[in-house]
Each structure stands twice: as C-alpha cells, then as structure tokens.
Image (cartoon, rainbow, N blue to C red; front, side, top):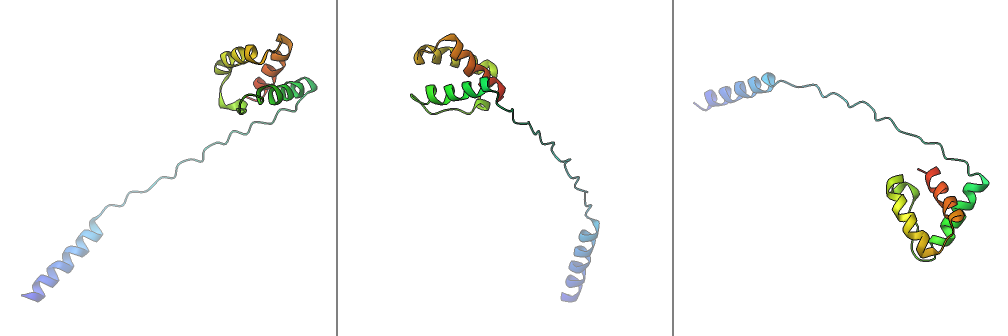
Length: 102
C-alpha cells in the first residue's frame, strides 16, 4: 500500500513537473538614454549664472534650473524679481541662463 502511494506520488510529481508550461521572459528593450550636451556658457549666460547664484542665494537655497520647466519658471522669476529688486536687464540675464540649462 505504501509503495503504491509512493509510486503514485512520484508519478504525479513527474507529470506536474513535465507538464508545466514555461513562458519565455522577453527582455525589455534598453531604455534610450538622453544625453543633453552641456551648454557652453557665453559671457552673457555666465553673467546670468552669477546673478542667479548671488542674488537668489541671499534669501533661499538655489534650485536646479531643470527642476521646473519654462512655464513654471516664469511666475517664479517674476515674483523673485520684485523681491530681489532686480532691473529688467539683470532679470533677462537670469532668465536666459535658466532657459539655457533646461
């Protein structure tokens, strides 16, 4: 009796192990890596960077320009221009620097 149970158990294990259908796992295609060339800073952009780092860091931490897109930067820059008391020329320089880094 025990031998019949063992034989049936072994046969069942063999049947189930052979009968399971294995599905092939397809590898995901490699993600394309976007490499954006760093923009060489012209004297105008360098001036904007210096203004950004010196004027804005007086009151708060600096945000990476890529943290926001152009649409989100626009109201932030307008609001900060008034608080930092920057003229339009300096603000345009900062804006050009930030846009060049996006």
